[in-house]
Amino acid sequence: MTISGFARNFSPLRILTEGQIEDIHKGTLAVLEKTGLRIEHERALKDFDKNYCQVNYDDKRVRIPSGVVEECIRRCPSSFRIKARNSKNDMLVGGNTLYVSSFPGMETVDLDSWENRKPTREEFYDAVTVYDALENIHFMGNYVPWFGFEGLPPVMCIPEGFAAQTRRSSKVLKMGYLKNSEIFTIAIAQAVGVEAMVSCMASPPLTYYTEAIDALYRGIEADFPVIMLSGGVMGGTFPATIAGGTLVNNAEQIGALVLAQLVKPGAKVMVENIAYVQNMRSGSPSFGGIESSLHNAIFCQYFRKLGVPVQIAGSGFLSSKISDSQLGYEKGVAGIITAFSGAHIMYLCGGLFGELTAHPCQAIIDNDLAGMIGRFLRGVEVNNETLAIDLIDEVGPIPGFYLDKEHTRKFWKNEQFQPKVADRLSITEWIASGKKSTLDYAREKMKEILETHRPEELTPGQEAEVERILEEARRYYKKQDLM
Image 1: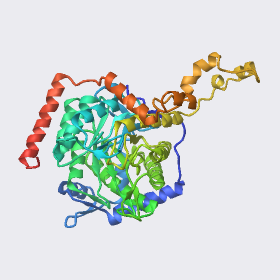
Image 2 (image 1 turned 180 degrees about the horizontal axis):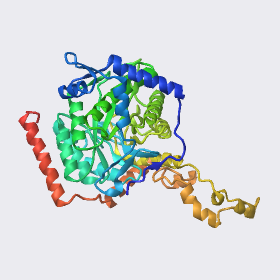
Image 3 (image 1 turned 180 degrees about the vertical axis):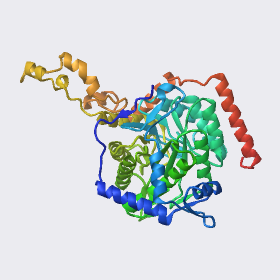
Image 4 (image 1 turned 90 degrees about the vertical axis):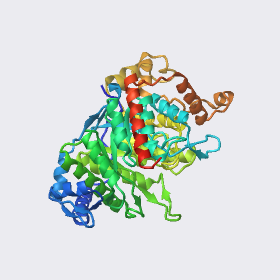
Protein backbone atom coordinates (compact mmCIF):
# COMPACT_ATOMS: atom_id res chain seq x y z
CA MET A 1 0.00 0.00 0.00
CA THR A 2 1.22 3.53 -0.78
CA ILE A 3 -0.19 7.03 -0.56
CA SER A 4 -1.93 7.69 -3.87
CA GLY A 5 -0.34 10.94 -5.01
CA PHE A 6 -1.57 12.36 -8.31
CA ALA A 7 -1.43 10.15 -11.42
CA ARG A 8 -0.40 12.03 -14.56
CA ASN A 9 -2.42 10.55 -17.41
CA PHE A 10 -0.83 12.41 -20.30
CA SER A 11 2.69 12.95 -21.59
CA PRO A 12 4.83 15.46 -19.66
CA LEU A 13 5.50 18.89 -21.09
CA ARG A 14 8.61 19.03 -23.29
CA ILE A 15 9.80 22.54 -24.05
CA LEU A 16 13.10 21.53 -25.69
CA THR A 17 13.75 19.38 -28.75
CA GLU A 18 15.65 16.10 -28.48
CA GLY A 19 18.60 17.84 -30.11
CA GLN A 20 18.58 20.62 -27.50
CA ILE A 21 18.42 18.08 -24.66
CA GLU A 22 21.38 16.27 -26.21
CA ASP A 23 23.30 19.57 -26.38
CA ILE A 24 22.60 20.13 -22.68
CA HIS A 25 23.78 16.62 -21.88
CA LYS A 26 27.01 17.02 -23.84
CA GLY A 27 27.59 20.38 -22.17
CA THR A 28 27.00 18.88 -18.73
CA LEU A 29 29.49 16.10 -19.42
CA ALA A 30 32.01 18.66 -20.67
CA VAL A 31 31.70 20.72 -17.47
CA LEU A 32 32.22 17.63 -15.30
CA GLU A 33 35.22 16.40 -17.31
CA LYS A 34 36.95 19.70 -18.08
CA THR A 35 36.03 22.10 -15.26
CA GLY A 36 35.11 19.59 -12.58
CA LEU A 37 33.89 20.11 -9.00
CA ARG A 38 35.56 21.29 -5.83
CA ILE A 39 34.95 18.61 -3.17
CA GLU A 40 35.94 19.58 0.38
CA HIS A 41 35.99 15.99 1.66
CA GLU A 42 39.03 13.71 1.91
CA ARG A 43 37.15 10.41 1.78
CA ALA A 44 35.16 11.53 -1.26
CA LEU A 45 38.34 12.61 -3.07
CA LYS A 46 39.80 9.13 -2.51
CA ASP A 47 36.58 7.44 -3.69
CA PHE A 48 36.64 9.48 -6.90
CA ASP A 49 40.37 8.84 -7.34
CA LYS A 50 40.11 5.06 -7.17
CA ASN A 51 37.27 5.11 -9.72
CA TYR A 52 39.16 6.59 -12.69
CA CYS A 53 38.44 10.25 -11.93
CA GLN A 54 41.13 12.92 -12.11
CA VAL A 55 41.69 14.27 -8.58
CA ASN A 56 43.89 17.20 -7.57
CA TYR A 57 44.25 16.90 -3.80
CA ASP A 58 45.83 20.35 -3.46
CA ASP A 59 42.89 22.35 -4.79
CA LYS A 60 40.39 19.53 -4.05
CA ARG A 61 39.26 19.50 -7.68
CA VAL A 62 37.59 16.40 -9.14
CA ARG A 63 37.18 15.94 -12.88
CA ILE A 64 34.89 13.08 -13.86
CA PRO A 65 35.25 11.29 -17.23
CA SER A 66 32.10 11.02 -19.33
CA GLY A 67 32.22 7.23 -19.26
CA VAL A 68 32.12 7.20 -15.45
CA VAL A 69 29.20 9.63 -15.45
CA GLU A 70 27.19 7.59 -17.96
CA GLU A 71 27.81 4.34 -16.08
CA CYS A 72 26.75 5.85 -12.75
CA ILE A 73 23.58 7.28 -14.28
CA ARG A 74 22.72 3.79 -15.56
CA ARG A 75 23.10 2.45 -12.00
CA CYS A 76 20.46 4.82 -10.59
CA PRO A 77 17.06 3.21 -9.93
CA SER A 78 14.33 4.95 -11.92
CA SER A 79 11.85 4.31 -9.12
CA PHE A 80 11.92 3.21 -5.51
CA ARG A 81 9.72 2.94 -2.44
CA ILE A 82 10.14 5.17 0.63
CA LYS A 83 8.85 3.76 3.90
CA ALA A 84 6.63 5.92 6.12
CA ARG A 85 5.65 5.25 9.75
CA ASN A 86 2.28 4.04 8.47
CA SER A 87 2.57 1.87 5.36
CA LYS A 88 -0.51 3.53 3.82
CA ASN A 89 1.67 6.66 3.50
CA ASP A 90 4.62 4.93 1.81
CA MET A 91 5.67 6.65 -1.42
CA LEU A 92 6.57 4.92 -4.68
CA VAL A 93 8.72 7.56 -6.36
CA GLY A 94 9.07 7.45 -10.13
CA GLY A 95 6.87 6.78 -13.14
CA ASN A 96 3.97 9.16 -13.71
CA THR A 97 2.97 9.92 -10.13
CA LEU A 98 3.36 13.37 -8.58
CA TYR A 99 3.66 13.81 -4.81
CA VAL A 100 3.18 17.21 -3.16
CA SER A 101 5.20 18.42 -0.18
CA SER A 102 4.78 21.11 2.41
CA PHE A 103 7.16 24.06 2.06
CA PRO A 104 9.35 25.40 4.88
CA GLY A 105 10.00 28.81 6.38
CA MET A 106 12.49 30.12 8.89
CA GLU A 107 9.67 31.78 10.82
CA THR A 108 5.91 32.11 11.03
CA VAL A 109 3.87 35.26 10.33
CA ASP A 110 1.07 37.10 12.08
CA LEU A 111 -1.97 36.78 9.81
CA ASP A 112 -3.14 40.32 10.59
CA SER A 113 0.09 42.34 10.46
CA TRP A 114 2.04 39.86 8.26
CA GLU A 115 5.13 40.49 10.38
CA ASN A 116 7.38 37.48 10.91
CA ARG A 117 8.45 36.00 14.26
CA LYS A 118 9.75 32.75 15.76
CA PRO A 119 6.93 30.23 16.39
CA THR A 120 6.30 28.71 19.78
CA ARG A 121 6.76 25.01 20.39
CA GLU A 122 2.97 24.57 20.53
CA GLU A 123 2.53 26.37 17.19
CA PHE A 124 5.19 24.13 15.65
CA TYR A 125 3.52 20.92 16.79
CA ASP A 126 0.08 22.24 15.80
CA ALA A 127 1.32 23.09 12.31
CA VAL A 128 2.69 19.57 11.84
CA THR A 129 -0.71 18.24 12.93
CA VAL A 130 -2.41 20.39 10.27
CA TYR A 131 -0.04 19.18 7.55
CA ASP A 132 -0.62 15.59 8.62
CA ALA A 133 -4.39 16.10 8.19
CA LEU A 134 -4.28 17.67 4.70
CA GLU A 135 -4.93 14.99 2.11
CA ASN A 136 -3.04 16.68 -0.73
CA ILE A 137 0.19 17.06 1.26
CA HIS A 138 1.79 13.68 0.70
CA PHE A 139 5.02 14.13 2.66
CA MET A 140 6.92 16.55 4.90
CA GLY A 141 9.82 18.52 3.44
CA ASN A 142 12.88 19.38 5.50
CA TYR A 143 12.68 22.28 8.01
CA VAL A 144 8.88 21.99 7.93
CA PRO A 145 6.93 23.84 9.08
CA TRP A 146 9.71 26.13 10.36
CA PHE A 147 13.37 26.02 11.24
CA GLY A 148 12.89 25.31 14.93
CA PHE A 149 10.88 27.17 17.54
CA GLU A 150 11.36 29.56 20.46
CA GLY A 151 14.01 28.65 23.00
CA LEU A 152 15.95 26.22 20.82
CA PRO A 153 19.70 26.63 20.23
CA PRO A 154 20.26 26.70 16.45
CA VAL A 155 22.10 23.36 16.49
CA MET A 156 19.01 21.66 17.96
CA CYS A 157 16.51 23.07 15.46
CA ILE A 158 16.85 20.21 12.98
CA PRO A 159 16.78 17.32 15.51
CA GLU A 160 13.88 18.86 17.48
CA GLY A 161 11.96 19.74 14.33
CA PHE A 162 12.42 16.25 12.89
CA ALA A 163 11.30 14.75 16.21
CA ALA A 164 8.14 16.90 16.09
CA GLN A 165 7.39 15.69 12.55
CA THR A 166 7.94 12.09 13.66
CA ARG A 167 5.65 12.50 16.67
CA ARG A 168 2.80 14.29 14.89
CA SER A 169 2.82 12.73 11.41
CA SER A 170 2.99 9.26 9.90
CA LYS A 171 3.87 10.56 6.42
CA VAL A 172 7.24 10.30 4.67
CA LEU A 173 9.81 12.79 6.03
CA LYS A 174 12.88 14.59 4.69
CA MET A 175 15.81 15.81 6.77
CA GLY A 176 18.29 18.63 6.42
CA TYR A 177 21.74 18.79 7.99
CA LEU A 178 23.70 21.15 10.22
CA LYS A 179 26.84 20.32 12.23
CA ASN A 180 26.25 16.55 12.03
CA SER A 181 22.55 16.79 12.91
CA GLU A 182 21.83 13.94 10.47
CA ILE A 183 23.51 11.56 12.92
CA PHE A 184 20.60 12.14 15.26
CA THR A 185 17.78 12.50 12.73
CA ILE A 186 18.79 9.26 10.99
CA ALA A 187 18.80 7.58 14.41
CA ILE A 188 15.31 8.93 15.14
CA ALA A 189 14.03 7.69 11.76
CA GLN A 190 15.51 4.24 12.37
CA ALA A 191 14.07 4.15 15.90
CA VAL A 192 10.52 4.53 14.55
CA GLY A 193 11.05 2.35 11.47
CA VAL A 194 10.95 4.90 8.63
CA GLU A 195 13.17 5.77 5.66
CA ALA A 196 13.60 9.53 5.62
CA MET A 197 15.06 11.40 2.66
CA VAL A 198 18.55 12.82 3.28
CA SER A 199 19.68 16.07 1.66
CA CYS A 200 23.07 16.71 0.07
CA MET A 201 23.30 20.31 -1.15
CA ALA A 202 25.85 21.83 -3.48
CA SER A 203 27.33 25.29 -2.84
CA PRO A 204 27.24 26.98 -6.25
CA PRO A 205 29.20 27.29 -8.30
CA LEU A 206 30.45 23.70 -8.54
CA THR A 207 31.41 23.08 -4.90
CA TYR A 208 30.49 20.63 -2.14
CA TYR A 209 31.55 21.31 1.44
CA THR A 210 32.25 18.70 4.10
CA GLU A 211 28.84 18.78 5.81
CA ALA A 212 26.96 18.03 2.57
CA ILE A 213 29.18 15.06 1.67
CA ASP A 214 29.04 13.73 5.24
CA ALA A 215 25.24 13.73 4.94
CA LEU A 216 25.46 11.85 1.63
CA TYR A 217 27.65 9.11 3.11
CA ARG A 218 25.47 8.76 6.20
CA GLY A 219 22.30 8.58 4.11
CA ILE A 220 23.74 5.87 1.88
CA GLU A 221 25.02 3.89 4.87
CA ALA A 222 21.51 3.99 6.37
CA ASP A 223 20.06 2.87 2.97
CA PHE A 224 17.92 6.02 2.89
CA PRO A 225 17.16 7.92 -0.34
CA VAL A 226 19.65 10.76 -0.89
CA ILE A 227 18.52 13.98 -2.56
CA MET A 228 21.10 15.96 -4.52
CA LEU A 229 20.11 19.62 -4.75
CA SER A 230 21.47 23.03 -5.61
CA GLY A 231 20.27 26.55 -4.91
CA GLY A 232 21.99 28.53 -7.61
CA VAL A 233 21.03 32.07 -8.55
CA MET A 234 21.07 32.81 -12.29
CA GLY A 235 23.17 35.92 -12.73
CA GLY A 236 24.93 35.38 -9.38
CA THR A 237 26.22 31.90 -8.64
CA PHE A 238 24.96 30.52 -11.98
CA PRO A 239 25.32 32.04 -15.47
CA ALA A 240 22.55 34.54 -16.23
CA THR A 241 21.21 32.40 -19.08
CA ILE A 242 18.78 29.62 -18.29
CA ALA A 243 20.76 27.23 -20.52
CA GLY A 244 24.05 28.06 -18.79
CA GLY A 245 22.50 27.85 -15.36
CA THR A 246 21.15 24.44 -16.31
CA LEU A 247 24.64 23.15 -17.12
CA VAL A 248 26.11 24.23 -13.76
CA ASN A 249 23.08 22.90 -11.90
CA ASN A 250 23.24 19.57 -13.73
CA ALA A 251 26.98 19.19 -13.17
CA GLU A 252 26.68 19.88 -9.45
CA GLN A 253 23.94 17.35 -8.91
CA ILE A 254 25.28 14.66 -11.22
CA GLY A 255 28.66 14.96 -9.50
CA ALA A 256 27.12 13.99 -6.16
CA LEU A 257 24.98 11.36 -7.88
CA VAL A 258 28.15 9.80 -9.31
CA LEU A 259 29.74 9.70 -5.86
CA ALA A 260 26.67 7.95 -4.43
CA GLN A 261 26.76 5.28 -7.14
CA LEU A 262 30.52 4.78 -6.79
CA VAL A 263 30.07 4.19 -3.07
CA LYS A 264 26.99 1.98 -3.44
CA PRO A 265 25.84 0.95 -6.93
CA GLY A 266 22.05 1.17 -7.12
CA ALA A 267 21.79 3.67 -4.24
CA LYS A 268 18.40 5.39 -4.12
CA VAL A 269 18.95 8.94 -5.33
CA MET A 270 16.91 11.88 -6.55
CA VAL A 271 17.81 15.28 -7.96
CA GLU A 272 16.17 18.49 -6.76
CA ASN A 273 16.00 21.92 -8.38
CA ILE A 274 15.78 25.25 -6.52
CA ALA A 275 17.36 27.63 -9.06
CA TYR A 276 15.98 31.16 -9.41
CA VAL A 277 17.14 34.47 -10.86
CA GLN A 278 18.86 37.42 -9.24
CA ASN A 279 17.12 40.78 -9.19
CA MET A 280 19.65 42.82 -11.13
CA ARG A 281 18.21 46.09 -9.86
CA SER A 282 18.62 45.30 -6.17
CA GLY A 283 21.00 42.33 -6.03
CA SER A 284 18.54 40.32 -3.96
CA PRO A 285 17.08 36.96 -5.04
CA SER A 286 14.01 37.25 -7.25
CA PHE A 287 11.64 34.46 -6.22
CA GLY A 288 8.55 33.35 -8.11
CA GLY A 289 9.70 34.44 -11.57
CA ILE A 290 8.61 32.69 -14.73
CA GLU A 291 12.30 32.12 -15.50
CA SER A 292 12.45 29.68 -12.58
CA SER A 293 9.54 27.75 -14.09
CA LEU A 294 11.37 27.53 -17.43
CA HIS A 295 14.38 26.16 -15.55
CA ASN A 296 12.18 23.68 -13.67
CA ALA A 297 10.63 22.47 -16.92
CA ILE A 298 14.02 21.86 -18.53
CA PHE A 299 15.32 20.18 -15.38
CA CYS A 300 12.36 17.76 -15.38
CA GLN A 301 12.67 17.00 -19.09
CA TYR A 302 16.42 16.38 -18.84
CA PHE A 303 16.45 14.14 -15.78
CA ARG A 304 13.35 12.20 -16.82
CA LYS A 305 15.24 11.34 -20.01
CA LEU A 306 18.15 10.11 -17.87
CA GLY A 307 15.74 8.02 -15.79
CA VAL A 308 16.52 9.75 -12.49
CA PRO A 309 13.59 10.71 -10.20
CA VAL A 310 13.02 14.47 -10.01
CA GLN A 311 12.06 16.71 -7.12
CA ILE A 312 11.29 20.43 -7.60
CA ALA A 313 11.56 22.77 -4.63
CA GLY A 314 11.71 25.90 -6.76
CA SER A 315 7.93 25.75 -7.26
CA GLY A 316 7.49 26.88 -3.64
CA PHE A 317 9.76 29.95 -3.66
CA LEU A 318 7.74 33.17 -3.89
CA SER A 319 8.30 36.92 -3.61
CA SER A 320 4.96 37.77 -2.03
CA LYS A 321 5.03 38.37 1.72
CA ILE A 322 1.31 37.93 2.31
CA SER A 323 -1.49 35.64 1.17
CA ASP A 324 -2.58 37.79 -1.76
CA SER A 325 -3.15 37.65 -5.51
CA GLN A 326 0.58 37.87 -6.24
CA LEU A 327 1.23 34.81 -4.09
CA GLY A 328 -1.63 33.05 -5.87
CA TYR A 329 -0.34 33.61 -9.37
CA GLU A 330 3.30 32.99 -8.48
CA LYS A 331 2.51 29.71 -6.75
CA GLY A 332 -0.19 28.68 -9.21
CA VAL A 333 1.91 29.21 -12.34
CA ALA A 334 5.00 27.53 -10.83
CA GLY A 335 2.98 24.62 -9.47
CA ILE A 336 1.11 23.94 -12.70
CA ILE A 337 4.22 24.12 -14.90
CA THR A 338 6.17 21.88 -12.53
CA ALA A 339 3.37 19.32 -12.41
CA PHE A 340 2.91 19.32 -16.19
CA SER A 341 6.67 18.97 -16.73
CA GLY A 342 6.81 15.55 -15.10
CA ALA A 343 8.19 16.18 -11.60
CA HIS A 344 7.86 13.25 -9.23
CA ILE A 345 7.84 15.45 -6.11
CA MET A 346 6.84 19.12 -5.90
CA TYR A 347 7.23 21.53 -2.98
CA LEU A 348 4.14 23.74 -2.75
CA CYS A 349 2.10 24.04 0.44
CA GLY A 350 2.51 26.57 3.23
CA GLY A 351 5.32 28.84 2.04
CA LEU A 352 5.11 32.61 1.73
CA PHE A 353 8.26 34.69 1.09
CA GLY A 354 11.25 32.72 -0.17
CA GLU A 355 12.19 30.10 2.39
CA LEU A 356 11.86 32.64 5.18
CA THR A 357 8.18 32.59 6.15
CA ALA A 358 5.39 30.00 6.15
CA HIS A 359 2.04 29.41 7.82
CA PRO A 360 -0.31 26.41 8.15
CA CYS A 361 -3.29 28.51 7.03
CA GLN A 362 -1.48 29.08 3.75
CA ALA A 363 -0.88 25.32 3.56
CA ILE A 364 -4.63 24.79 3.91
CA ILE A 365 -5.27 27.15 0.97
CA ASP A 366 -2.49 25.49 -1.04
CA ASN A 367 -4.05 22.09 -0.31
CA ASP A 368 -6.88 23.23 -2.60
CA LEU A 369 -4.40 24.36 -5.25
CA ALA A 370 -2.65 20.98 -5.11
CA GLY A 371 -6.00 19.24 -5.45
CA MET A 372 -6.89 21.28 -8.52
CA ILE A 373 -3.55 20.48 -10.13
CA GLY A 374 -4.04 16.80 -9.30
CA ARG A 375 -7.48 16.85 -10.88
CA PHE A 376 -6.06 18.27 -14.10
CA LEU A 377 -3.28 15.66 -14.18
CA ARG A 378 -5.88 12.91 -13.99
CA GLY A 379 -7.26 14.17 -17.29
CA VAL A 380 -10.52 13.22 -18.96
CA GLU A 381 -11.95 9.71 -19.18
CA VAL A 382 -13.44 9.02 -22.61
CA ASN A 383 -15.63 5.92 -23.02
CA ASN A 384 -19.20 5.04 -23.96
CA GLU A 385 -20.55 5.90 -20.51
CA THR A 386 -18.81 9.28 -20.16
CA LEU A 387 -19.62 10.31 -23.75
CA ALA A 388 -23.28 9.79 -22.76
CA ILE A 389 -24.56 9.63 -26.36
CA ASP A 390 -27.78 7.80 -25.43
CA LEU A 391 -28.47 10.22 -22.58
CA ILE A 392 -27.92 13.24 -24.81
CA ASP A 393 -30.43 11.77 -27.27
CA GLU A 394 -32.91 11.11 -24.44
CA VAL A 395 -32.68 14.67 -23.00
CA GLY A 396 -32.61 16.47 -26.34
CA PRO A 397 -32.88 20.25 -26.71
CA ILE A 398 -34.62 22.70 -24.32
CA PRO A 399 -36.67 22.08 -22.15
CA GLY A 400 -34.47 19.02 -21.46
CA PHE A 401 -31.86 19.18 -18.67
CA TYR A 402 -29.49 16.83 -16.82
CA LEU A 403 -29.84 17.78 -13.14
CA ASP A 404 -32.26 14.98 -12.23
CA LYS A 405 -30.51 12.22 -14.14
CA GLU A 406 -28.85 9.17 -12.55
CA HIS A 407 -25.82 9.76 -14.81
CA THR A 408 -25.28 13.17 -13.15
CA ARG A 409 -25.60 11.70 -9.66
CA LYS A 410 -23.06 9.02 -10.59
CA PHE A 411 -20.39 11.18 -12.18
CA TRP A 412 -20.41 14.73 -10.85
CA LYS A 413 -18.30 14.13 -7.75
CA ASN A 414 -15.67 12.28 -9.75
CA GLU A 415 -15.57 14.91 -12.50
CA GLN A 416 -15.59 18.02 -10.29
CA PHE A 417 -12.88 18.89 -7.77
CA GLN A 418 -14.42 20.22 -4.56
CA PRO A 419 -12.17 22.75 -2.77
CA LYS A 420 -12.20 22.86 1.03
CA VAL A 421 -11.71 26.60 1.65
CA ALA A 422 -12.16 28.40 -1.67
CA ASP A 423 -15.11 30.80 -1.90
CA ARG A 424 -17.64 29.32 -4.35
CA LEU A 425 -20.69 31.23 -3.04
CA SER A 426 -22.89 33.56 -5.09
CA ILE A 427 -22.50 37.27 -4.27
CA THR A 428 -25.78 37.25 -2.35
CA GLU A 429 -24.71 34.24 -0.26
CA TRP A 430 -21.26 35.72 0.29
CA ILE A 431 -22.66 38.99 1.66
CA ALA A 432 -25.14 37.15 3.87
CA SER A 433 -22.40 34.93 5.30
CA GLY A 434 -20.23 37.85 6.39
CA LYS A 435 -18.08 38.50 3.27
CA LYS A 436 -15.48 35.94 4.34
CA SER A 437 -12.19 35.63 2.48
CA THR A 438 -10.39 32.42 1.63
CA LEU A 439 -8.01 33.18 4.50
CA ASP A 440 -11.00 33.43 6.87
CA TYR A 441 -12.12 29.97 5.77
CA ALA A 442 -8.57 28.67 6.20
CA ARG A 443 -8.47 29.93 9.79
CA GLU A 444 -11.73 28.13 10.48
CA LYS A 445 -10.44 24.96 8.84
CA MET A 446 -7.26 25.05 10.91
CA LYS A 447 -9.31 25.36 14.10
CA GLU A 448 -11.46 22.42 13.00
CA ILE A 449 -8.41 20.25 12.23
CA LEU A 450 -6.79 20.93 15.59
CA GLU A 451 -10.04 20.06 17.36
CA THR A 452 -10.70 16.83 15.45
CA HIS A 453 -7.53 15.39 13.86
CA ARG A 454 -5.58 12.93 15.97
CA PRO A 455 -2.20 12.03 14.43
CA GLU A 456 -1.04 8.46 14.81
CA GLU A 457 1.03 8.40 18.00
CA LEU A 458 4.39 6.79 18.58
CA THR A 459 4.44 3.75 20.82
CA PRO A 460 5.73 4.42 24.36
CA GLY A 461 8.97 2.63 23.44
CA GLN A 462 9.44 4.73 20.29
CA GLU A 463 8.71 7.95 22.20
CA ALA A 464 11.28 7.05 24.86
CA GLU A 465 13.88 6.28 22.18
CA VAL A 466 13.23 9.58 20.36
CA GLU A 467 13.69 11.51 23.60
CA ARG A 468 16.86 9.54 24.39
CA ILE A 469 18.33 10.47 20.99
CA LEU A 470 17.43 14.15 21.50
CA GLU A 471 19.16 14.10 24.89
CA GLU A 472 22.20 12.51 23.26
CA ALA A 473 22.21 15.36 20.70
CA ARG A 474 22.01 17.95 23.48
CA ARG A 475 25.00 16.41 25.25
CA TYR A 476 26.93 16.23 21.97
CA TYR A 477 26.45 19.91 21.19
CA LYS A 478 27.05 21.04 24.78
CA LYS A 479 30.38 19.21 24.70
CA GLN A 480 31.26 21.22 21.59
CA ASP A 481 30.18 24.51 23.29
CA LEU A 482 27.47 25.01 20.66
CA MET A 483 24.67 25.37 23.20
